[in-house]
Image (cartoon, rainbow, N blue to C red):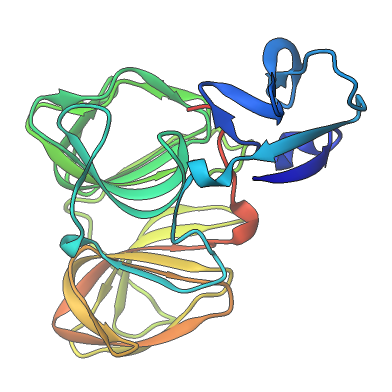
Length: 289
């Protein structure tokens, strides 16, 4: 158990205190209530200085999977067992995660036919790509290849009558982002990337902090992946060799800032989902769903 001190002037952006049973721990035996607001929680009267709170982080209660963003991370997700979620029929393969059921997370999520999550709000935003089947919510059907960004504060009741599989990223938005994005990539033609011979690109999203796209790599291509401010990819089709390892469909790679990797594309070519701008500074731990 570790104690950390936060100034209330900066706490809204840095407060990452532990939570248990919907209560943030302030001091042994003393819990924050919802009576007076403080950093999203209410602080009861206490002898503590009103300009600072001591937050005990119960780190052992949080799942930490590939949580060191200064290190390269690889998960060959097709070989990872499915883990049941609290919702019947919904399973996950966790790629990176900090938190329990409410978490800063990247996962592959599978919905059995007819399964659905209860209605909920995404306090930190949700980003997903449909990998198989058809995902559904109040906005309609989202078939294979659909890329969606639901910004912080958005609400929906997700499910799938036919069943589906998604790449899902939670709590990875800028807090002020309010832009909804939906791109149906099925049938779209990749344009040639003039800066990278042998690469075709379907742009999905770009802002001052990140760029998201689907790339097609021609068979036999040898190329250098440069992380810049961080790079993350999920292999969708085909295969490549990188750093002495074979990457196959649903292999996931995260390169930290300044890292790089040379890859050699296999004879079938490659299609990947790729995000640039994966920075430790973007790390936010949630206090609500």
